Image 1 (tube, rainbow, N blue to C red):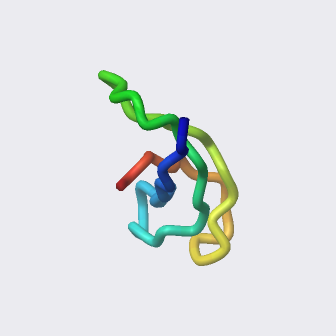
Image 2 (image 1 turned 60 degrees about the vertical axis):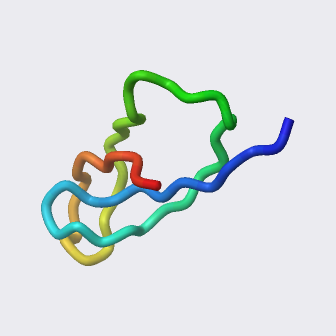
Image 3 (image 1 turned 45 degrees about the vertical axis):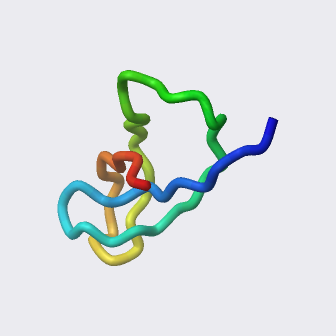
Length: 50
């Protein structure tokens, strides 16, 4: 199956720093990962956006 692209957006500043490939099957929850934000200069929670 084909994968869709999704972005990970920073919780604090809202910038979309990372892109990931996700399966095309719908999921009830969105991915949340702690990653480094180069604009905030700290590790923050990033949530999946579409």
